[in-house]
Image (tube, rainbow, N blue to C red; front, side, top):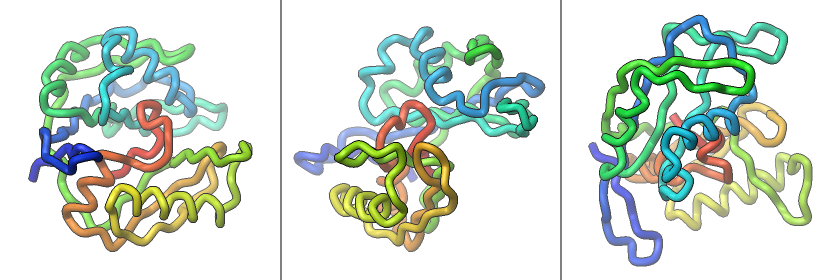
Length: 201
């Protein structure tokens, strides 16, 4: 099933959103908080990504070393969700090295696939800024805003917090219809979706 990009004003279907998944060469060490550095590294190679709506970037999973770093493993992936018209452009990152803070990763040849619906989706971290500005909102205020954002995006699901992560929370959304799960993967929740936040799998 192709994830369909929806114009939030007219609700007209525009184009599918696909997931570009790059295997990362194992053994690299990068900061466990690498969202901004990763986005900056990708943007250096592809400056247009900053203006590419409905494009989001996952953080990279690995094994923590206890000193604020993670080491990439065979399962480590850089995942980018982007509209169909942009997806093939990311092949240009294959074989490239990206400087992530003091570390560096090497990307292998990606796979490109449609989004697959799931009844339950999880995000490692969701960042929601409230007014007045708080370092991290309380669980109650965070849930209230997350539920409101889902409603505004026409998504029905049950939101629960998985963990507390500065400056946000790990989030699970369950009881999703196939259509709503695709929308959640496209829209995400909260901000900084190009920096690893609000990326649901």
